[in-house]
Image 1: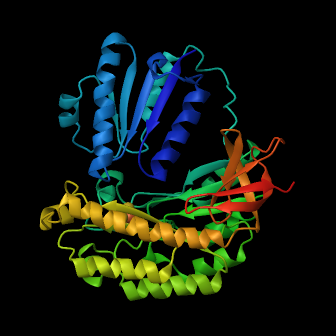
Image 2: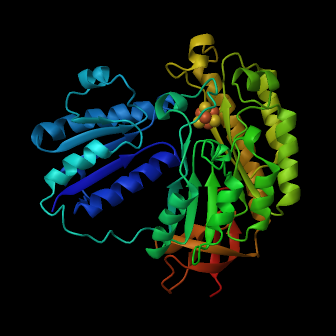
Image 3: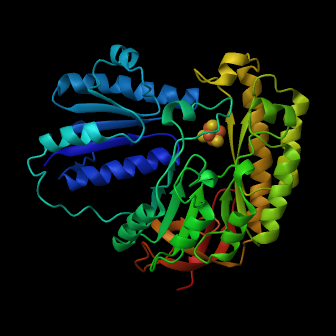
Length: 421
Ligand code: SF4
């Protein structure tokens, strides 16, 4: 029986691609290797969206050199956003890598895997998936935000037809999945290049009719593309969770313009207001970049003001790092020092930790519905519809169940409670 090992870093799209690859390999008779040294096939699904991620991929690649020398028959593949059209440079730098695969393009790898597996033609049952699954609905991005490498590596937007997505989700539900997250770099532009031009609201409406599917999520949205129709669909469809991921990136209009985001800070504030009016108790997550070229202290302060006024549930903050080929890397000097970027990042994290602890404290004593994802250190854990992480104790078998939990303790990052069932 051949064994595989997939190492993944980066966005949910990469995680979805890796899940898909694991399923395909298991169908071919491969089994997941607990110990990387025992694997016949190693796939690194890479991310280069920030320098820190790229450094980790390089570290991982270096660490595989010895292993490949010891086991030359082992297949090592580098997949994901580190692989662009020009692989000669990568081949030269990492000669121990056998295959270079662009994001989500695993066909060559699967062809080779087939020849390696003596049981490739036998039907295999794929191990029972987790209660939650990612489903890619649109690949690529047409936006070309000035700092972002994604459109260069994942290409232009390409949506999957509704019928194909429905079929995949029904299949997942058949295998026990209760919650799906519909994924794309910009899900709000879903469907614009398909023949009937369905939009994300139409897709959510269709998904909502799938029996035994309990929850639907989607990410990531783009403020400039989030329509009122979509907001109303989230408000009215019972399976669609009250959770929206809406990256703002900066609170200053000049920085937003230099980032080519296509909206102003005022527009974003009004959008949040509209969402909150339509969807009571909605939780909103955002992303912020600090230290974009030329960002002054005053401009950074505007981001802080926006975050402290809007009091969003989650803020993912990252320090700007120039990415090769992007407009920002070509046009602007990366002139904010690393210590200053770290200071700004920490300032936002401290602010957000205060806000999140106040928001979560309001849940103390309330009962929330948790979809149980697993068990860690004797406690079950899972997420609420609003994407809050909850830990609780119970002697029952809770995996994959929707459990009502009474919240006893809260923190900025997670909640602790007791099962009521
Ligand atoms: S919307 Fe902007 S930040 Fe998001 S993937 Fe597309 S180009 Fe990158």
